[in-house]
Length: 289
Image (tube, rainbow, N blue to C red):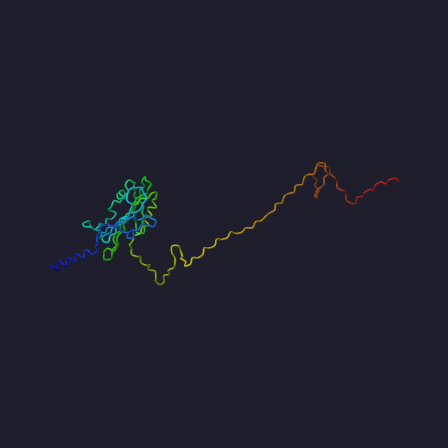
């Protein structure tokens, strides 16, 4: 009888070794938060953590300057094992397809006119969804959700459990893009995915591997930028304009001097040319003594 009781106790102990020790909600330091907001905010005010047999849930309160009533926070549930069936203290892992996320968004920010985004988006951990509201207070509000599916070992056991994330935040005068950017910059404070295997081409014979990245060839010592081509010099040819000389016409009645071409111009009397040959000039008359 004693042996049977001892065996039952041993089996019971083995059955609960995978469960985490349960603890009530307690305030922990921001350094122990499962998820970290991006640099520049929103800042962490408090972190309330609750441990279940198969999961850890944290509500991370965020600082805000919004006027809209409601709680600004990030809620995260990280499962350490499979979800429960609701019959005990183990949390249930409910897929988003079975959750009315629109009602959740409206409940988080009532009276803000939350509208679910029709766009497909994803961050470093996979796809996520979000809704945006713009109340009359001048704030912009976001309610975002993301589920990171679990990974299993070859045996079928859970290697890394499901991670569920919900962000609800309002900011005064913020744009939709700035609020959505927070979802892209959130970082989990734990390893989520196994490291990728190295490419099979590395180390193989006959397959050259060159230092070429997305920006092209990667230089060890970057070359100096090429000098900009100098503009071609042009010579300026100075031309002197010839000013035409205007000869004033002779006055009326002046003798006309024939031009070298023999064409006379003017309106005065024409003086004939002297006859060709020698010209005899008569001597003056002698005077009487």
